[in-house]
Image 1 (cartoon, rainbow, N blue to C red):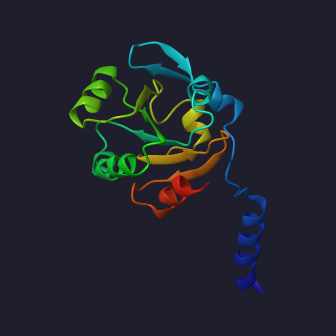
Image 2: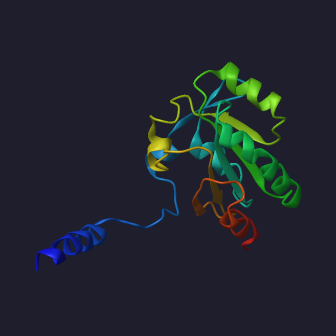
Length: 165
């Protein structure tokens, strides 16, 4: 009997956890403040709303992140394969100078914003449960999140989400 107790506890825990993947950004995440390259504050919801009708690949990265940099050639290849997709880069660099230098150094083409609260604090990073970067998400043409989490640029789920009609 005692050997079944841990299994029972695990079953109860799993049943009580919510394993659903969000398909919409929370109100708090939508209200998150980002910084533009020009230094202007903008709300995430306003940024993403500009691209309704287009697919958006969100790449959460930092200039100091070795895995982010390692994944960039794959992202550049995807940009060539999917020119109709908007590539939205959200940096979690704490210093704007490091963020901007990273964009230039790695010749990153796309739309760029900084998450000024970094990767450990803030409504947006809390919503996506950001514990590792890079982090890739795909938003479909209607504004729904079609891919919530990928941490490797060569993850097949990214390609599948970009191909999805």
